[in-house]
Length: 188
Length: 172
Picture: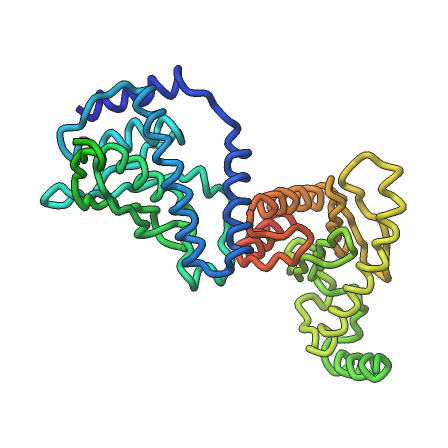
């Protein structure tokens, strides 16, 4: 099952996706974070803003993802995890984070990123280390936004980050609930 | 103040291991100077590859070390004029030895962004210094890629400092 997703992801990356220079991408994201830090001066606020930006990106990105990959509905949350890591991340960032620590009830998983193209050559200032800045928090927002558009309300957050001196970069994704299709108010 | 300083230090060396000239310390002084003549990084690097004098390994008293530090900054600063003169005559980044002070030489490396890397050293091979400068230049480029680093500001990263010292150990 995972092999199939992997080949699908590789195939889409090779053929159907337009590429952009990695350094340009890294520097652009870096200047966004640096500017947010300068403007807000409060790292919790910066985290929140990055997550909000990611959410807006995610709600639009999911359409792109479904159009290019043409995959159907996932059977369970485990499948969602595999899809996100092998196809989603591969398609947009050309990385495949490992899915680990799947909880017993299958409603939580961790993504371990062994390389993070957003954070190449970045060193956090000392104040950011004290105050808990999650540099790549935009990714959590993207996960939340895109999964919400496919009827899953999730909570995504960073557990560890190599930029802060930890061994690895890990994002934890928790499923809160499946959203039911609601009839818009005003229709009978 | 300078006069009393030097008299005490020469007194110290008389008791110690014979008169030491200013240029006998095995340390190199490395400084990176920004576009406004502001130092953005300084380091005193102990080199292991210089020819040792007969009194080699002699300890330098603290007062003398302090004097060296002030002197190093003056020497480097005065060499800046030489760099600015020479930069128009050569299209190389590595400007080799540009100035001499007592027994010490000053080598310079000018980056594309007009950052001057200066090294105060004793007699040393040009290639070694060129390699060291190239290494430091690459480290500087990586620092520039960090979005939190203001160009032309002081480089305070401990990782950068460690890597410069490692490179100095390897080449100097």
